[in-house]
Image (tube, rainbow, N blue to C red):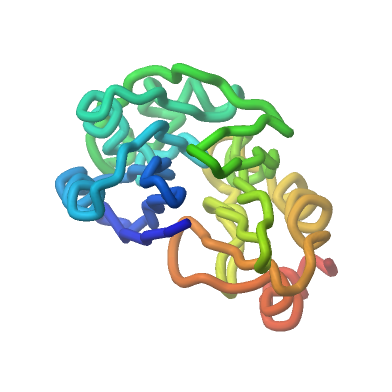
Length: 214
């Protein structure tokens, strides 16, 4: 298994490339700079099998069309954020954060769904709050600590904004408390912006989690 992190687009959202040992790969949050994404995939010799959006904001979806058309792969997003793929008001492109050019979803996800990536499996964890259909993606644990792609729900030292359309501070706090902090402390989190962390580090040092009383 390999994971590559590419900060892309004007807001430097993390696009993650997850590949199994045979090189079958998922493109998670292709938020911009498609040529950079292509270059890594082709340098590694990987074969993409799916593009997955953790939520429907422009900085995470801006390169959707480029990657799905180049590799002829399905586009996946949670059902509640699927409308944002083509709605400038919902995906924030109307605020001038980038041009909107995403196709609609090929598969609308629900909590608990499983996404095969070759020999790997990503499990969908609904974590609404930053947006109604925000999800985190659990890489089913192997011999080491579990890994969760947390999108814009939980960051290293921060949490997602809730002042965008459909956002909810109460839902965000519940998602973090009930869906993420329940994992073991050594669980690695790979957020939508910034560096990686662990559940244990965020329990100890995340000011926002302390303020939520979680």
